[in-house]
Image 1 (cartoon, rainbow, N blue to C red):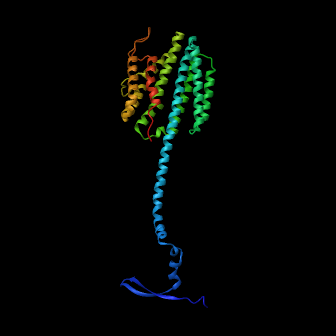
Image 2 (tube, rainbow, N blue to C red; image 1 turned 135 degrees about the vertical axis):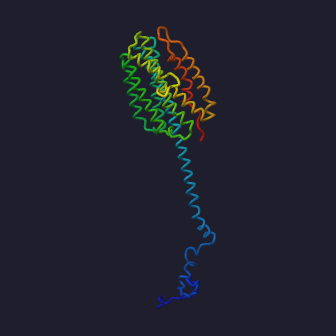
Image 3 (cartoon, rainbow, N blue to C red; image 1 turned 30 degrees about the vertical axis):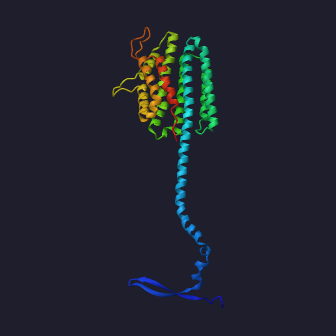
Length: 340
C-alpha cells in the first residue's frame, strides 16, 4: 500500500491554442520533478556540464584536422612515389643507352671489325652492372611498382641475346626488341609512380620528354649508328638497309613539316622541352644552357658534308647528333628536385 501512495504536485503551464496561451494546472508526480536534479547531470558540477556542452562542437574540428592530415599524407606519398619513379627511370635510361651502344659495337664486330671486341665486352659488363643496380634498387625500395618479375624476364632476354653469335642484322633486331621492351618498362614506371599524374606543367612536359620523346630520338640515332657501322664494315648496303637508313634519317630531320607530313621525332622532342622551359623560369636557368648547347651541336652536325661517295643530303651525321643530344639527355634525367 505504501508503494502505491505517491505525492503529486500541481504545476501551472500555459497551453497555446487558437485563442492564445491559456493557463492550465497539471498534477505531476513528484519523483518526475526531482529526477533531473538527482540524476547523472544533476550530480555533475557546473564546469563539467559546460565541458559536455562544448564537446559536440569539437567533433567537426577533429574531423577537419583528420582530413587535413590524410590529405597531407597522401601528398607526401605522391611525391615519394614520384621520386622512386624518377630514380628507376634514371637507371633504366642508362641501361637503354648502354644496350644501344653495345648493339652498335656488336654490329661492327660481327661485320668484321675486331678492334671493338674488347670495348664491346666492357660495354656488356656495364649492361650487366646496370641490371644488377636496378635489381638492387628495387629490393631496397621494396619493389613498390611490382617490376621484379618483368625485370627478371628482361635480364633473361639480355643473356639470351648476348649468347648469340650470328650475323649483324639478326643481332641488331634482337637488341632492338629488348630496347623496345625497356621502353615499355619506362612507361609502366612513369604511370605507376604518379609521374604521369603530376599536376604541375613543367613536370608533365619533362616526363613527356624523358619517357616518350627522347627515347625515340636516341633509338633512331643508335639504329643509324648500328646499321651504318655494319654497312661500312661490310662495304655493302642492301636495298632493305638503305630504306631503313633513309627512313631513320628522315625521322631525325628537324624541319617545319607540312600539314600532310609526319613531324620528325626531333621536332617533337624540341617542342616538348621548350614547353617545359617556358613553364618554369627556374628550369630555364638550369637546363636552358644544356639544351641550347645540344641544339647548336645538332645544327652544326646537320650542316656537315656527306661522306665520300654518298649522295648530297641535308641529313645530320648520326655520330655528331648522338653526341649533341647527350648533354640534354643527362640534364633531363636529373632535373631539379621539387619542393614539398
